[in-house]
Amino acid sequence: MPFATLNNTRLYYEEEGEGSPILLLHNYFGTLEAWSAQREALSREYRVVIADARGHGRTTYPGGRLRLIDFADDIAQLIRFLHIAPTHIVGSSHGAKVGLHLAREEPRLVQTLTAVDPPHLAEPTTQAYMERVEEAFPANEERLESEHAGQKPEHVRSVLLRNFMLDKEETPRDQAEAIELAGRIACPTL
Image 1 (cartoon, rainbow, N blue to C red):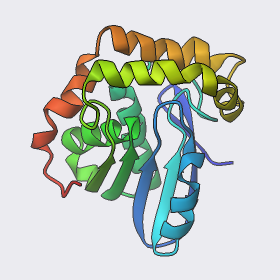
Image 2: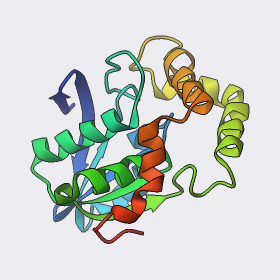
Image 3: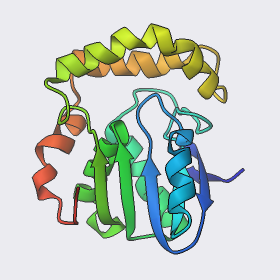
Image 4: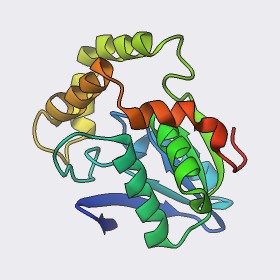
């Protein structure tokens, strides 16, 4: 299993295919398995890289608050570690916000960005989005715990949901800026 040790996080990633690199970033509460269907299709023409975000799946949780800037820093370090800059980035939901932040702050690392359903842009309001996720959580908790079996028991509730709820109470500045400053991104963006 390939891991990259970046700062204080042991990041799990997988690669498949050859060609121009494309990095797929999963949603919050998700894992790299969210990209299984796309991975297979894209790997026919691209070098596909997928990773579990910090505190998700098999990537370690270094403790403390899960912040967008740290997720983005992990991905920037992974891109450098794998020597795949500039890379195409496709991010879904929270992964889209990570991609928006990275494209703005580290433009030399990103060739193109596809942001699929970024929270706070795609939803009617931030509050409505957060409430919808919170309401759906109990029905998904068992499945999510299974998907994050590499973490400590009840990690999804005690860490991921807890951090999500803290973000609901007060949207961190780095998350707001990912959306507010998206117009400063220079690479082709969809």
